[in-house]
Image 1 (cartoon, rainbow, N blue to C red):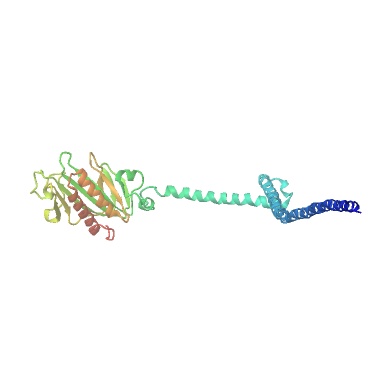
Image 2: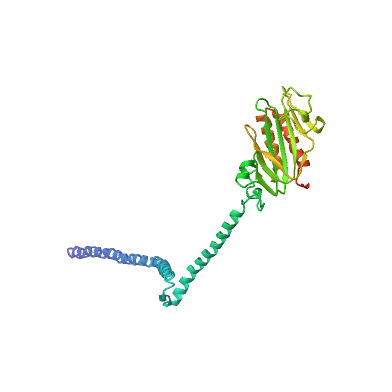
Length: 336
């Protein structure tokens, strides 16, 4: 009886041994859960669906090259029309123009317009060619005035202007100089004129058929020996038709005297400008808005640099000369 009890206990020990494989069952369940995770992994490509929409967005981008191709396709026939237009234009006179009336009409209209414009331009240039020689024609017909053609030119050499046909006929100022070759003794003559009827050369200068006014300016150096003598009574080449009481006199710092006539002399019918020699000159000022400023600047430079009058006194004398010209020789007055 006692021996049988342990025998009954042995199979009881085997039972927990049988439970060990039962413990493996949960281990088997774990791999069963893994496919559940894989299902989530399968859902990831489902998240790529919006990525699949991106190529759907690219579809309009794919349409752009199609549009470009269409535009290029549209341009090609236009480019093809141009040579066709040229051929049609070249063959306008041929009877083959009747073919493809629509294309020929469009092609023929463009060159036809160009031909018309070219034909219009030709008579315009011809008119300009007719008017051009009429400007500087014979100086007898004062049709054009140089001051209106070249406003930047303040003055010219008188005889060069005559040779070039650029002397003003309407009105102008002529400045001539008569300098002593050995001293600073000088005489300036300023002539204003208007309404020239004719200009022609003479043996010793240019003759203007018109009236005018002449203003005298005398520069007397400090070493001149006949200072007390009236200017009207001095030797030939040193005299002017004025007395001391008819002159405005400026005494410079170097004792030079600049004498400006208070009023100009009248010129009737015609007058002659002598051709200058040696260091003398004759220039013509055009009647421009700043003509008196130009005359002032010219006399200031001439008196100071050429005749050695001090700068301050030269400026004062130049202003006096320009003011006298403006007051007594402007073109508001009537000329004989």
